[in-house]
Amino acid sequence: MKNVLKIAIQKSGRLSEVSLQLLQECGISFSQNKNRLISSAYNFPLEILFLRDDDIPVSVADGVADIGIVGENVVEEKEKSIVITERLGFARCRLALAVPQSMNFNSLTDLSGKRIATSYPKILQRYLKSNDIQADIHEISGSVEIAPGIGLADAICDLVESGSTLLANGLREVEVVMRSEALLIQHPELSAEKEVILDKLMFRIKSVNRARKSKYILMNAPQSAVAKITAILPGMKSPTVTPLAEPGWVSIHTVVQEDDFWEKIDMLREAGAQGILVVPIEKMML
Ligand code: PRT
Ligand code: ZN
Image (cartoon, rainbow, N blue to C red; front, side):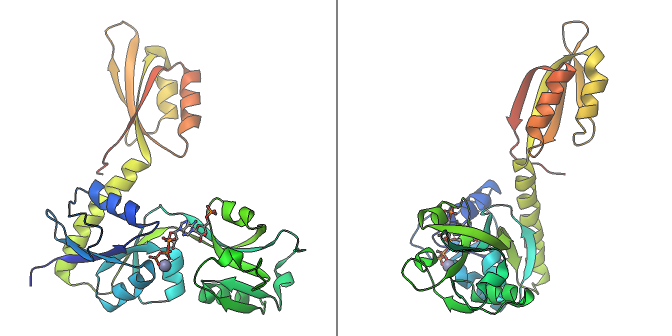
């Protein structure tokens, strides 16, 4: 059989578009028919399986898929034997405990003996156990946030991103149980041939993700400010400094990380940089 790597991604939901976009940014093209359950890439040895996110860890553990993109919350809940290949940095959220606004909550012990509704019973059970709390866990598969309002539970444990769903349901977040992001997971034992394909894919994914976090920055500055400016900009190696036609002036180019971006720009302006241009980077191979 021809050697292809099989990747499981979410068929439809919060992870679908971003997962497909990541593959496209890696230069992988495939047919985008929404109703297909499987699709083969035209220009990379990859087969894409479209599944419910809950089925991705088991598919990877059983070898139906070799790798998969799925939320860390699902991986933790399903407790399947898989390996985390890479943290992908998107679909960030937290699994949190929330109680009705009116409830008096001072510490976790206030949840002792209470009914907590969740779609993540295993993670919640482990968390309560590690905090020595005994509570009554009610597993429900969706619309967890309405459980207290309809008298089904005293509290909930659900995914939160902006917090607006909790607010709209008269709930308040009280404890973070776990933080989550999308993960690339893999079967624990891949054949040597599949490992080679995965290495190629990982090289591309890392280049795309690195580029996402970085910006290429260009500016003009008087020669006298170069030492001060280069001290602010560690860059990949050292910045490129080239003379301008105007005597005593140079152009400085380098790469900065998005995290401390605005802070760096302020410092550069104070140091004498002018005409600062910031350009997105498409791929960053190191
Ligand atoms: O059909 P399938 O089973 O495949 O999908 P699903 O409905 O189980 O999952 P889906 O598509 O809703 O989410 C997929 C993954 O996205 C989750 O497993 C998380 O890893 C991640 N993710 C990131 C989120 C959120 N953010 C999120 N905010 N998943 C769900 N939510 C929901 C949450 O359940 C709550 O209802 O959004 C609401 C809260 O959002 P805020 O912004 O109001 O706080
Ligand atoms: Zn699901």
